[in-house]
Length: 359
Image (cartoon, rainbow, N blue to C red; front, top):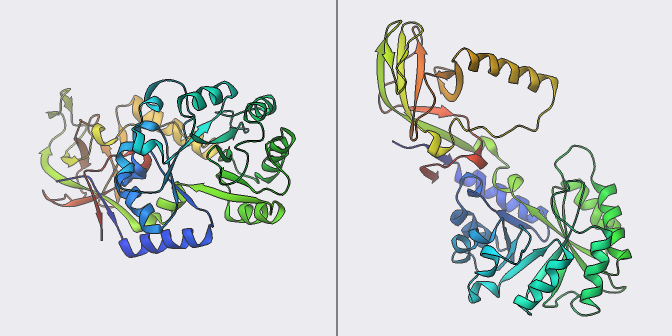
């Protein structure tokens, strides 16, 4: 009686191996809910892949992965002189690679931990975190000639977190690398590591060709863990089925049935992320039309659920409960039995599954 993610293990593992083989220097990303798999499972899979570094989103995620993965841990959220960043146990701190995105934090980090390793993040067109050209020069002045070289216990490279927008990122990457060089953070004859996110395989190959004196390390999350979507199958369990006639009342709010049919109660509610929708980045005309259509259904009290019964996504009978949802199934549709499994369409990064079964 669970909201379950079932994974075709052989296909999923083959995909993970293929990505690792095609991407030298791969840095898997395990953050948030672990892309639906859980952070602990992804940490174990990173160890299985044999990579030397695993990236996490925040310092608070470190305890769940540090005991399951023995390599270096890159924290993607920039270091700040407060909060969880200052509370990392000494045995884990020795394995950390911090992200520094402000020149003023560089001195504070080195004062807090003189042996700290870190990457300098350069601000990209995302405008989320990062050093601008002036900040890069300020960081270079603080570092001096120490810590700039490969294998040091200080600066371990330059980080670029690029947007997901379509089109090539290479021109932006080249411009940003030029800014890093101009700031004095690259020494002639010494290799520099470039940690990058959201570059395609083709872009990575071209970058390695044009910047052969850099070691390129792709940080990959979604395309690694969720790269074979058809090998992932989400199901919910039917908990109860109730026949209703038009006007019959049901649910927390005493709603009335719009016509005869059935109320089908299934596993999966707000605690799992069901019915909680993140803003979409799709601005196409089709996406806008779909938003308007959903708004019309919402106004009329009908909201399409992610649960599929008899080949169709069914309407919520009322807003989902914490651990279950009530669906309205009109007369004429095949009625599932208690214990049956129904398909669920979810956003993996926003869903907490009761069970993850890897076959």
